[in-house]
Image (cartoon, rainbow, N blue to C red; front, side, top):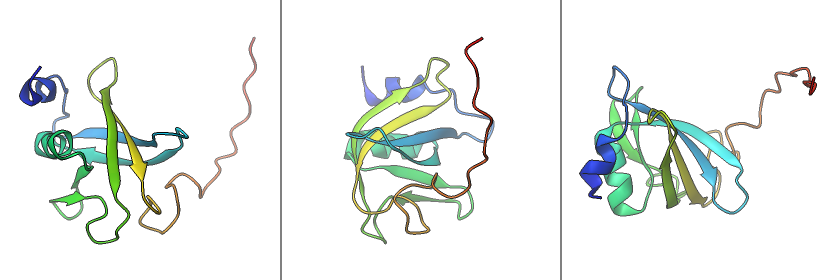
Length: 117
């Protein structure tokens, strides 16, 4: 299957974007969430480095170009509906712009543990 056929499988939202969950390849730690459009996904699939679309800056950003904290792609997968991407990477340094390893280590929402009943 060609890269274009793979990209055509993604159900991008009305803004032409799909959410991307980024996970460390060896530990499966969830590192961050970002957005891709078709070109960001194309660049990611063909370069082996994670490229995202910045909604605030309205531009592409290849993770690590300014910080040195690169993401080398190991796998890219679609969910069952084709509207979310799982990017499995090898992260160098912190993934979060705040300088932490993961973007999901700040606020604990203190959910009540569920029961199996």
